[in-house]
Image (tube, rainbow, N blue to C red; front, side, top):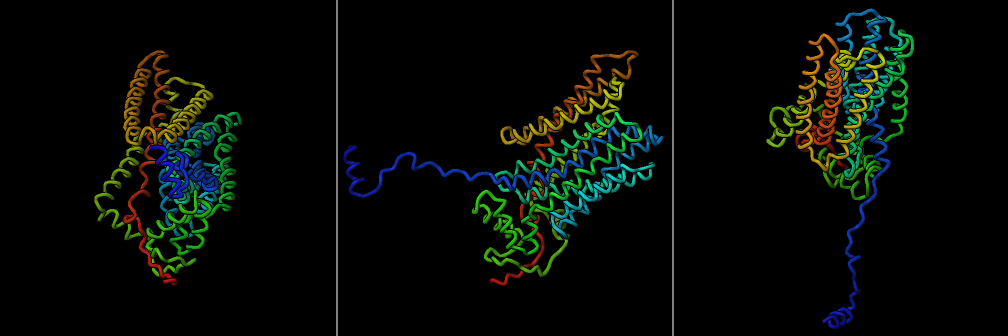
Length: 438
């Protein structure tokens, strides 16, 4: 039988094949240029983390140096979210106008000015002006970093890289805590000013570096600059085939005909997105409504869980728990920042193995248990006439456990539930293009 098969092959003239001939083709290598650009863009998120982390310790010295009340300190710390909201709204318009890359530069410049103003503040009013400017810059960075990263990243690493802004936020919080401890050795009137002002240095350096990075290919297509978008995609995709597929997808989302291959397509009519928001909020399809509720709901309850209070007021929490020395308080906050950073990395690397939903549900359960136990521990400490060491240790441990579970939640929802992942029809811009090649 074997001789007959050999004879048939010989007669047919077909070459003999082995199992090696049927191996699947090798996957293309990762595009390190695109990964480097995405990481550098994500590093702008360090600004938000640093601002949150550094203010938690700087408040101790600002209150003592400027002789301000607890209410003024709370306004100084808590008003950042309002300023960020203003910056995020403005960044959306700015990024559509001048592009994603230059919007990142604007974010760095605004934060640089705010950091300088806070560093040289002579009174509370001056400090609040600097806080406002820096907060707007943080809002810019918070909005534009994930957008640029998602639009530039190749498909093979997009999910991984879009989680990096959150990784760098946590890294920034850790740097802020370390800065608090490092500059706490200076005289009071200098220490908090260095804590707040030193962040101007990385802000301006990042702004300069970003100028050498490519523009978002999606924004280029929206401007009708197809030729330049194709060149960017060729540099930031894992293969030529992927670059062509990405360009076709972006053209479809922009409403540009598939057979239009001009280098430049004039934009004859456009809108600022009012129709898109009207369709998204008032007349969504069932699929879009489900995705919108899930994304907005999880983001809302994430912020409602109290993480900002724990991060901003962690020195006060640890003081309530029984740590009395300033150095001890600042070192404890460093532990908080370190825990957040480590566990956001854990969530990022193990997300695809565990799954988003199990990670979210387990994180919520862990946060509930840790916050409840923390409340019990602090209540026992507050009602005791002497130091209850086990309650002190329990309270400190529960703060760390809480931020660990929160970081797992954070990593899961930032990768899996982005508003940018809504169906194309829900986010398609209302523009008209004229292709001269037709």
